[in-house]
Length: 86
Image (cartoon, rainbow, N blue to C red; front, side, top):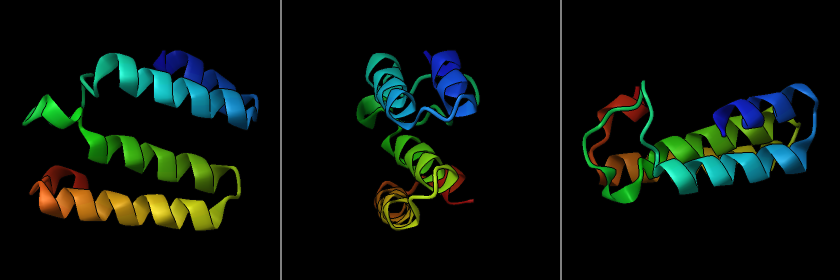
């Protein structure tokens, strides 16, 4: 699923990339190598919103990227996810 997301980004297919990103985090609940495995009850929500921010900025949707980044910061602070804040 992550490979599909990256493929859609490379082809500049925003809607398919967005769908793949949602599917990836829905299916994996955020459990993949490289993520902090502290509390998976939220499915590493902070990492999902951070990826969403990057996706929006990559496609030139700056305002949506800022909003997703703000959500990432809020959630990371509330859940004391210092890894995501770094």
